Image (cartoon, rainbow, N blue to C red):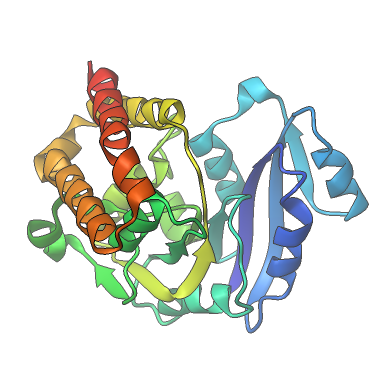
Amino acid sequence: MKVDIICPLYEAEKYIEKLHNSLLQQTNVDINEIRYVLTKSSDNSENMLKKLQLNYKVIEKKDFSHSLIREKEAINSKADIICFITQDIVIEDNHWLEKLIEPILKNKVAAAYSRQITKFNNIEKYTREKNYPDYSFIKSKADIKRLGLTTFFFSDAASAIKRDVFVKLNGYDHKNLPINEDMYFAYKLIMNGNKIAYQANSVVYHSHKFSLKQLYTRYKLTGRFMKENSYLDKFGTNASGGKLAKHILKRAIEDRNIKVLIRYPFDMAARFIGMKVGKM
């Protein structure tokens, strides 16, 4: 089955060359196209794309949308599988993509997502542990009672979907979603009887150092998303957030991670307040 890799770019000068080379080194996979969509910026991204002679298109900043850009590229794709990635992932395994799409090729699932690990010893280390464990599994509608909202956890930082299923389910329904577009589609996948695989052996590094202001903004957007998609609340939004907060505190204490313990109350407050404000 042919695979198209779709990657939105913005101020991506420092990422492009290393990311593209890591994609070219993927083995045992029929990559049809690597499709970059560059949002205009002031850095050297476009010159870098030209220099490397890559396949890309440019859009105005006002036209960027996390959901609509991916949706358009997926619909225009001629491949069997679409693979969504973000510019800031680091791929160090030449079999990453092969491992990611394996359950799709075996017709076990309609979609799959990779394990994400951070290179920083911060709170993200523990959120990654919780959301991306070291064992693989498959999720379906039958798991909703057990998993609640996390049944629909899915990340398009490194994921793959059968293109015909994406098109059949109408992608993101042509909505401009500023965040959580991956969860929006995962819900549609699961509720329509499809399965999603989490591939723990398909690993990417995805690392951030968010400021409290950035966290607040992200969770404000998440709160707004949850308000606009309130049907998700019945699956235990608060319970899911509470479990994550407890895991972070427990692991930070176990590791005697003083920096995380000092940051913890302010970090959790930024998330909590952002979510509340977003839902208002």
